[in-house]
Image (tube, rainbow, N blue to C red; front, side, top):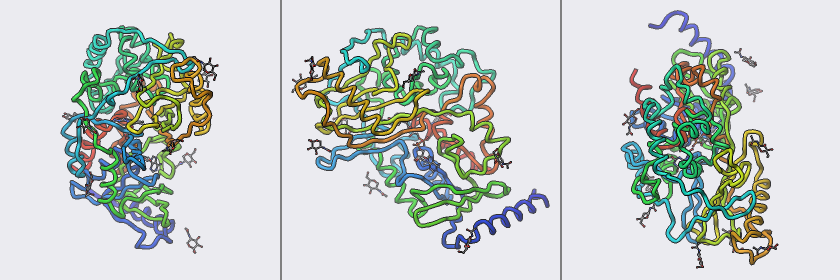
Length: 474
Ligand SMILES: Cc1cc2nc3c(=O)[nH]c(=O)nc-3n(C[C@H](O)[C@H](O)[C@H](O)COP(=O)(O)OP(=O)(O)OC[C@H]3O[C@@H](n4cnc5c(N)ncnc54)[C@H](O)[C@@H]3O)c2cc1C
Ligand SMILES: *[C@@H]1O[C@H](CO)[C@@H](O)[C@H](O)[C@H]1NC(C)=O
Ligand SMILES: *[C@@H]1O[C@H](CO)[C@@H](O)[C@H](O)[C@H]1NC(C)=O
Ligand SMILES: *[C@@H]1O[C@H](CO)[C@@H](O)[C@H](O)[C@H]1NC(C)=O
Ligand SMILES: *[C@@H]1O[C@H](CO)[C@@H](O)[C@H](O)[C@H]1NC(C)=O
Ligand SMILES: *[C@@H]1O[C@H](CO)[C@@H](O)[C@H](O)[C@H]1NC(C)=O
Ligand SMILES: *[C@@H]1O[C@H](CO)[C@@H](O)[C@H](O)[C@H]1NC(C)=O
Ligand SMILES: *[C@@H]1O[C@H](CO)[C@@H](O)[C@H](O)[C@H]1NC(C)=O
Ligand SMILES: *[C@@H]1O[C@H](CO)[C@@H](O)[C@H](O)[C@H]1NC(C)=O
Ligand SMILES: *[C@@H]1O[C@H](CO)[C@@H](O)[C@H](O)[C@H]1NC(C)=O
C-alpha cells in the first residue's frame, strides 16, 4: 500500500532528479526495468536472463567490451586463440543453456596441449625443482570429506552457517595441516594464482573456491572429460553486446545514483557520447563491491558502507611474452623450494607460472603481488619476468645459448585486479556474509559477482540465475 509519505518521497526524488539532470535530454534518457552495473560474467548473465524474463535492460560497463575477466587473444597471423582469462566451464545445464542462448558452441576443454611438458623450477633461485610426489588423490578425497560438511556453501556464500564453524575461520594453511591435506597443495596452487599467498586466507573462502563445483577428479588426472570451453570464450560476450545494442553502455561509468525512491532508481552515467540518465525499476550491481569501486553509488553510511568497507582485494596480472627463450614445448611451473612454511607454493610477489601456448614463440605468464606489496606496473612486471628468465637461463633450466635476456617483448598485459575479494576471519565470525546477503533487494538493489559466490563463472551464473528469478517473482 502506498502511503502519503512514500508519495512525498517519490515527489522529492523526482524534483531532485529534475534539478540535477535538467540538462540530460529525453533522447539521452533510458527507461528500463533493470540497470546492470558491470558487464563481466555475472552482469552479462543477469542482463540476458532478465531479457529472457521479458524485462528491458541496460548494462553499464567501464571497459570497451563486455566479458570482464574473460579476455581472448587472437594471434593476427595464425588466428590461433589464447585465453588470457577464463578458460573453462563446468558441464552444467546452466552453462550449456547460456552458451546455446547466445549461439556459441561448446567443446571439451583440453587441460593439456599435446607435446608440451611441464618442468618445475624455483623461480626465486632459478634452480630446477622436484616436487614431492605425494598422494594427491588421497589428499584431494580427504579435502572433499571436509568440504562435504558444508553443503550450504556449495553454490554461493549466502548461507554461511552461523555461528561460523571454527574450521572455516582457520587460515587455510592451518586447515591443511590439521587435516593432513599437504599433498593436494601443489595442485591447488595451480589454481590459487590470483590469491596472493592463498594459504593465509580464511578456510571458508578456500573451501568455496576449491569445491567440486569447480574442480573434479577428471581435471585432477588431466584427461577429462569434465569441463567445457568455446573455441573463443569471448564469443558469448560479443553476441550479448550485439543483442543489447545501444543498451550496452560501454566505456561508461556511474557519475551519480539515487535509490531513495520506493519505486525505482535513477543512475547518471558518463558515456563516450555524453551523459545519459537511466531510470530503472531495479538495479543489479555486478562489480567488485570495494568502496573505491562503488564510485557514484549513493551508498548508505549506516547500512551499506560498514559492510562493503570490510572487503579487501588481491592484485594479479597476466601477459603474453615473445622471445622469452622458453622452448615452445615447455611449460614452467614455479615451485617454492625455500617456501617451506607455506607448502612450497611460489614466493610472491613474483612470476607464478609460464605456460606454453598454441602460438609458437609466445608464452603466457602470471604474476602475483602479496598483501604488503599488491600493486605493480607493467614495466615492474616486465623487469621481474626478465630477472626470472635470466635466473632460469643461468641454471640451464631453459637453454642458455642466447645469453642474457634482453630482447623479450610483452605482447599483451592485463591487470585482473581487484581479484578474489575477501574479509578477515574475525569479520566472518561476526556474521559478515549474513549481513552482506541481507542487503539483497534493499533500495531496489541486488548484488552479484565473484565476491558473493567465488571466482567461477559456472557458480556465478547459477547464483545469478536464481537471484534474477527471485527478483522478478514479487
Ligand atoms: C586469468 C584468470 C583465469 C580464470 N580462469 C577461470 C576459468 O577457467 N573458469 C572460471 O570459471 N573462472 C575463471 N576465472 C575466474 C573469473 O574471475 C570468474 O569466472 C568470473 O569471470 C568473475 O565474474 P564477475 O562478473 O564476478 O567479475 P568480472 O568478470 O571481473 O566482471 C566485472 C565487470 O565489471 C566491470 N566493472 C568493474 N568495476 C566497474 C565500475 N565501477 N563501473 C562499471 N563497470 C565496472 C569490469 O570491467 C568487468 O567487466 C579466471 C580469472 C582470471 C583472472
Ligand atoms: C546545464 O547547462 C547550462 C548551460 O549549458 C549550464 O550553465 C549548467 O551548469 C548546466 N547544469 C548542470 C546541472 O549541469
Ligand atoms: C544451481 O544451484 C542449486 C543450489 O542452489 C542447485 O540445486 C541446482 O541444481 C544448480 N543448478 C544448476 C543448473 O547447476
Ligand atoms: C554468435 O556467435 C557465433 C559464433 O560462435 C556466430 O556464428 C553467430 O552468428 C553469433 N550470433 C549472433 C546472434 O550474434
Ligand atoms: C580439445 O581437443 C579435442 C580433440 O583434439 C577437440 O575436438 C576439441 O575441439 C578441443 N577443444 C577446444 C575447446 O578447442
Ligand atoms: C622440445 O622439443 C625439442 C626439439 O624438438 C626436443 O629436443 C625436446 O626434447 C623437447 N622438450 C620437451 C620437454 O619435450
Ligand atoms: C556519508 O559519509 C560520508 C563520508 O563520511 C559523508 O561525506 C556523507 O555526507 C555521508 N552521507 C550521508 C547521507 O550522511
Ligand atoms: C615475436 O618475435 C618475433 C621475432 O622477433 C617477431 O617476428 C614476431 O612478430 C613477434 N610476434 C609478435 C606477436 O609480436
Ligand atoms: C611481500 O613482499 C615484500 C617484497 O616485495 C616482502 O618484503 C614482504 O615480506 C612480503 N610479505 C609477505 C607477507 O609475504
Ligand atoms: C649461462 O650463461 C651465463 C652467461 O650468460 C653463464 O654465467 C652461466 O654459467 C651459463 N650457465 C650454464 C648452465 O651454462
